[in-house]
Amino acid sequence: MIYADCDIDGVISAVILYKHLIKFTDNVEIKYVERSRGHGSGLVIDQIEDDTDLYIAVDSSSNDVEPLKALTEKGIDCLVIDHHSVDVENPYCILVNPQQSDCEYPNKNASGGLLVYKVCQVIDDYMDTRYSLELSDLPGFSLMADVMCMKEMENRYFAKVSLKGLRHEGLKLLFEAMNSDLKNLTSTDFLYGVSPAVTAATRADNIKLAIDFLMCDKATPETKGYVKELIKLNEKRKVVQAEALERHKDSIKEEDKVVIVYDPTIGKGLNGLVGQELSKKFNRPAIVLGDGEDENTYAGSFRGLEDFSMLDLLERCRSVEHTGGHPGAGGLSLKKDNLQDLKDELNNRLSSFVPDDTLYYDLEFSADSVNENLINYLTEFYRYSGNNFKPGTFLIKDLFISDKKLMGKTNNTVKIDCGKLQLMKFKTDEEYYNGVPVFTEVEAVGSLNMNVSIQYRPRKKVIKACQLFIEEYREIN
Figure 1 (tube, one colour):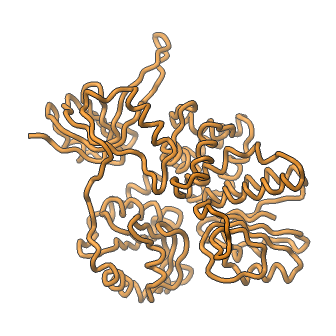
Figure 2 (cartoon, one colour):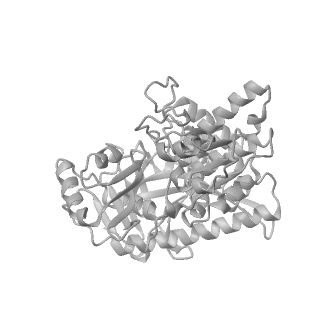
Figure 3 (spheres, helix red, strand yellow):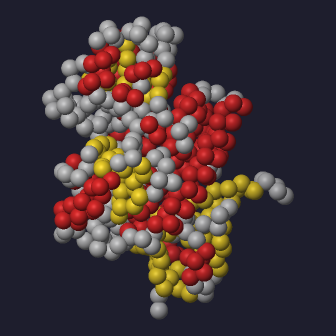
């Protein structure tokens, strides 16, 4: 019995393990609970039949002592393959986790999916088989989805295997549906396209859709149907996220060191994404809360900054009942009566913190020097980007705006024509569009991209456009 955690790393982990074990026995099954119920083995043990021989939790459960004790007392062996922090000793399982104090495995930044894959490699060694090779394109996606460190050489290797050696037919279809070039995939294509679409299913309490999709080995009509469902859920997710940001953007107090909002209408699955948007907009950590398990409790998600561990900070706060996850992203719960205490405690602990709205960039270029060759060179350098190795950001000078256009189903994308370079601003609105000046010289900061499309009429033609996905621009007087 495999227990899949309810995020994309957990789903990939479970699918890798299932596809590998099914080569040896058909007596294997995946169990799960929806994201709205939470994480951990305690939520699923009532689904585990008494005649189960082996229970395997992936991407969770390192600290689940009591649930695993209950299973072992029934005679069920327990294996946990996880990468989250280990806070207690758990004698009721075999634990594969590089965060253990006595673990000598050098990669402390592995994802659940990568660790499961390594276990499958070991099984192959013992059984003199090579089945894991068929699944080698999946671990890198779990690493990217869980935003693991991309300075880690093993992580970079598996990211390369995923993007350069993609075999999964369902993922190919989803990349293509999002206008990605299969011959030239980057981490950005995955992080801002495919990953949110698959995650949209788990956030909508439809983890079965994500599992069914990743189980697909062939490009069948059923697989194409899964792709359409994922894209539909992702579009809905975008709308909910944008509306939540709009509701709360004017309610943030400048003196608060951490953005904290309560909004039960967002839903547990999207709290973290809204927190991420609020954190980015206000350049400070963010907490988005909804209703907890009882009427006296709030529960939600946090998003932090790279400068410090938000998880460690919340663990030190007396007003927090429970927290867990990663240093920059996770969940928490607290008593409703303690909300103001949490705000005060965070303001005190972060009293010297000053939100930094500075735009940083790696290099600067004149618009005349930006061409396809330069963009392709930079794309290759930053192809395997992620945590601690961000995609390149550039200042482009000598831009002259000749035209602008409001685009997208919800008018949330602005295209700004600057000669041979197009400036693209996403997740924005008509107010931003109206503020863009025309026939004006500007400079802009953002990431460079080649947009490739095919025109089929009157004859087939490949159209390429140099683009700058802008964070901000300023007029030059």
